[in-house]
Image (cartoon, rainbow, N blue to C red; front, side, top):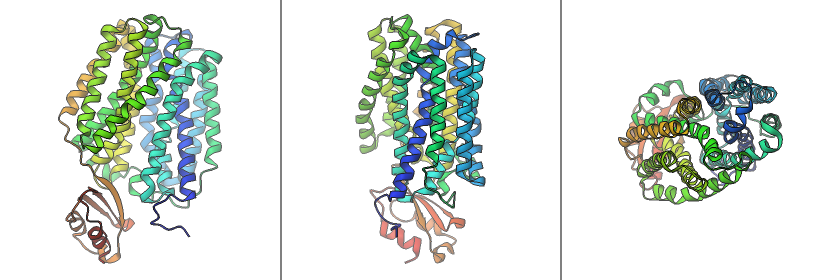
Length: 457
């Protein structure tokens, strides 16, 4: 019999986390591979203009933003697996449509349909259903690592596949990966219940407080701005490598490989410093300022291959740092019991930023060339810096879910009693689950007293 308090993940939990992480990686790989190639190869499509290329790059983000939360809520009603299966089929259909298209409008339609397979929230909720509270952070980290790895692989593999098989071949590979993902779902352990965990999905009653929280809104704007800048930059950077760096479009893979490897290892000291020294606000501000300087560098000195490669390496170091740290900041800042809702709004903001960035980058390039794109991204970085300057240092806390005894549930002031325990910063009691969600500073927490209050022992 499985020990509910075991410090090790069970074989079933490990299988669930590994399979869902691989499913996420397959799907995101198909989504990301188009980024480094569409701005260059897409211009050969009938009717292509820079603005329409930008729409094609960002189109999937719009339907993802619109459908992410509704699909997550639908999975609460009809179950996770039906939503995931249907989402993968929609994604595969969108990739096939884009692969069959010979005009830019067909590719845009395919990308819109790809985005309609918005299953991220359902996958995360299923992961919560299949893992115990004490192992959920590890399981989420596995998915986070799979997303980062898929992005890195996509930046290298995308140009190689496109060079060999063309843009149509790239979309056909994406279609096959989505269908392979359907096969992976069959390997996921089955569960008879869903939404056992309040923070696995969007709770309607937590939505309004989340949308009123100033620092959560700053972080939502941060991920929107980050992905808008990424998408706009991928309109300009591939073209800059060709036009100003003299690098053939089939050779771009080594630039992205270098940038991502250096960027991954380059961000680690800053993450360690920010967490250990409790200076994540300083790290956030520094990374945004670094992105601003990169865009100004591209604007001013981005002529020649070496300056472009150096700028791209620094850009990806700052990007990787922000991509890794922003979800952690959301988790720290979100109120007790509201992390699922906060992450739902955060993910919606991320995809909306991708949509806006693609359109904005294409429009700016058509309006005034590469300089307008880099200048527009620099202005967005400056606005972002102003927005986060007033952000408070986040609380360095961890979320816990405590089962409650009937005697504890009967207390009208239980939340206040929990908050009075040394090290507890926030608490919310959910009667329907016979549980409390608390945020704790592990360096100050009196765990024995917390468990005594929860169980009235």
